[in-house]
Image (cartoon, rainbow, N blue to C red; front, side, top):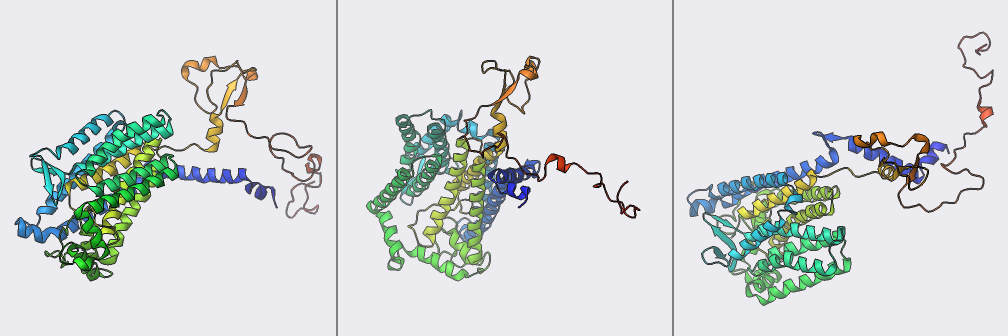
Length: 500
């Protein structure tokens, strides 16, 4: 085996190859930005825009009949949804401009107070709006907002900041962390649960548990809290009559086909009619008054009917792309807060989609939560767009991670003959400040010191010299010298092709 091949199989050789591959990836640019940063951004933007555009199409298809018969304008719902989508993406651009550091830092307290005020306005007479047995909306002139959708953003920002100060920097001890978490996160969640809105509470709490685990919390603690939350969720559902009816309907929807199971069964009919490729856009039959909330909670059933299995898998693929982009953005985030914000936003979008889809296909009780970007609802699409904006703001601050050689280089310092005689040069390979360049110590008095933790001593063979591993080049130095008869051959020469 040659020396090159044997050297490439060593740990040093493998690290060198990884560093070389990483260097090539870092040199790949998309629009002047390293590809590993720009690619997740483009995927996130493309997936979000595609889902929003497809959502507008499906909202129009599923709501046109009701809009025409109820409002006299078949475009009533699509025009409102398009306006809300435009406002949402403008708000997302503003979030990117402001940056997640400012939102989770200087603006966090005002945002938290505003969120709490909106959640409390639900119970103010004349402002709060009650529908389907729940008080979840606030009427502000011609606009009706659902505060719980925007509260999700504030809760994610607050939790990310607290998790970083507890598990990252260590500025918070356990007791203070629990107090701040209960006030900053627990209070908004309790107000949402009191509306009652168990669906939003379930989505938020599950996302918080994902963030806590990835921040460094004990896995047993997280699993215990998850089990406790599931038990509490079903306990509250059994106590409340309408939630208990949803659980019973899930177990046997055909038994309640004329009451609570009517909507779920009509959704089954829609999926069954769609088959593989669907009956065609705009050709749904269930939207003609048979399927309640066809453009909102049950829009996924209309997608299954008009676009078939292919369309439903395409929607899920869009959220898989968002999840991939969110994880990649979190991987390259500059700090723990950025990582947790990206992961929290991703969890909110994906978990809410799964909650809606699992309810529509009959494997989980109906929650009343819309599909992000797809279902009709101004608050839903605006908050979803702002979550994407938060993820993009984290990606905007991404930076290249240090390689092993960068860390070793920064671990070196220039000192004098003694440890106390420190030269003003900070790091090897970094520019010396102009104001201190004239103070550099002369070369003969300098030496390099590795400031990293000392490595464990490795035994070496007897007689081996310290330093790098010696490579056997074969003969001795004298034998490797060119002999008189070892010169280059010349074709057609007279003396057997040898140089005289």
